[in-house]
Length: 333
Image (cartoon, rainbow, N blue to C red; front, side):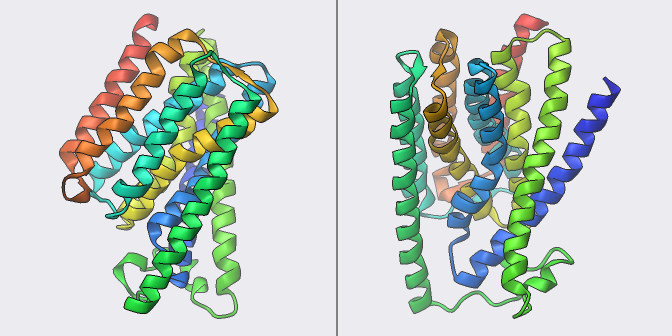
């Protein structure tokens, strides 16, 4: 048990570094090219923080642990909204980009509903995977077009943010290299790639340690997927969102969560299902998926007022998450 605890702490340290590098690199890309931070969060940051879910699901279905794989995605999406946005808003109230609730949030909600409908027959088959991957392509096309339109408007209406703008103040010693004409482009890419790699490694170490401890306590794979594994693979999102919130990059934080929930379904479930179809248990369909949809729906009334998720709303989300964890743990107490 001591070994697992040490590995868990080591993973946490690597995770912190990965989040710091990823946010620094991503915010610099947004500043350099005049791209909305929300778009960076929806794509680069979300993809990087979804890699642990993808790797874990790939390994899980290869070991015929479909319950662990599906539970991981459902639990991770619940944790993204209830735990991560809840904690982030308690640290600092999150201001949503005005378009996020009109464009990206409805897409996330629709994809969540599509996931549920495809699973109603008890399986996520290869055809379902192809539908989800097609949705991923459509979403990326939408994001690119929306980003191009926003960048064009930004270039014609306002100048790019100055280098010392509060939104993009360098917070790391490495950031000085990002402003150098010669090393800047290389360092921006290096920071993003290094951040993604560290997030994946750190999360993997933590999940392996957590799963080992859960196995010792004889907890079922589905519950492990919904709780320990889901929280473990959501730690990159938590670290990245907390880092973004602390650096007053709330658009990156919100974009990261919306994008991560989208990519968890479209990318992770879609690609893994094409490789290996997955079984969905009745309990998952009857209880856990509706709870995931419920948390997704709850986000809108909490954030629609002034496009802001304030501390009371965050506290409600966090309380809901704790209640759900208690509900899952009760049979084992």
